[in-house]
Image 1 (tube, rainbow, N blue to C red):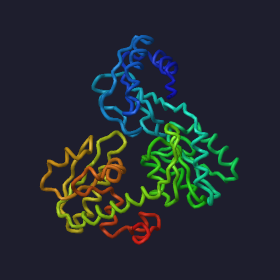
Image 2 (cartoon, rainbow, N blue to C red):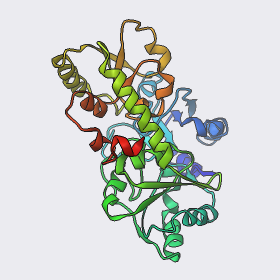
Image 3 (tube, rainbow, N blue to C red):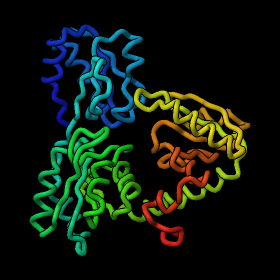
Length: 336
């Protein structure tokens, strides 16, 4: 199902003379870990470790384990490199592009876009090579298609990450709706939040399509409840994520100062994994701000018994940002 470029990995390992390799992959690709590790051992004679820790993206490189086991090379599977990040690290990225057809699912998407003419097109990394085909299908049905340029953490035009939607923001004002190629809702949900545009997710694995509008509305209703509950809190924990590209101590200090100026009492926390089980031990805290992956507070909110906000939502609590700016112009009445 995925193109793992195994021959390329083997050739690169031999070229670099690597003696110890750490393989890292997200949960959905871990079933291939055994076979890949055994082939690398056989073909390269290198010692191979497979990371058992969760992996959430290209921002979550296993640099600490790589250092501690003294690996020569980290083979990071399932994500594209972040331009300009970690140039000094010995990391090989394998994008693991999906080999599944998209035509049938794209035809279903067209049936949901009868009134929209200008369509934005986006994809996660697994389907980025299929954007051209998706564009052809849309254009064959009379649609004008726009693909946003790469910027920020994005390597390819049209690419989206769970934390970077610069490609779709660049075209949002010019399109009537956005189609995204992606398995599941994760990447798709961030698009209407980032742009305010109707978003249709095309899932090539399942051959299905889905309008994300109501999913987005439900999430925003829950976010408003969390923001309201946060306002009533007195003791706040500000969590600094310790992942390789997520740590932002300066932002944590700034938010601490702003919250204490507003008469909240705060402490700074740090955590490699921001999970409910770890936070529940802080019985005297009323709420949290997480400065790591911005999707933790939104996508996982039902798992937390206490309100947990991202920095943008804290600005709403403090009156420094309007809710309508956060929801791209959608008023309370509209999303209710």
